Length: 76
Image (cartoon, rainbow, N blue to C red; front, side, top):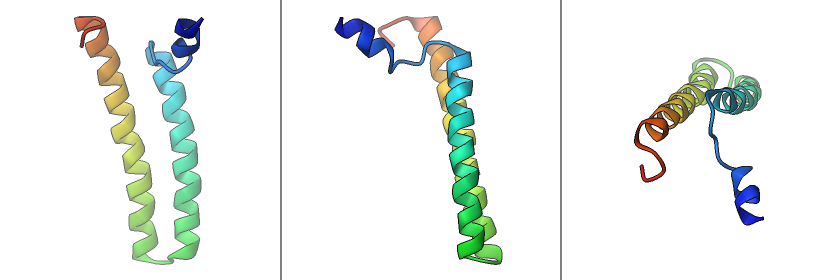
């Protein structure tokens, strides 16, 4: 029973990683828009880029981890 429950929190396929990346991007853009309103000018734009850039890094890391997991198995 616990294995089935644990499976809900494990990303196994690239499709799941893309769905999570989309959700992260949606939240990051919403947060970035709030930064643009709260900090008008260059500071707000820089914070907007930082929030969306973090999503790119997280998405790339998830995709890389899936490929490494397939190549090296459970132990990696």
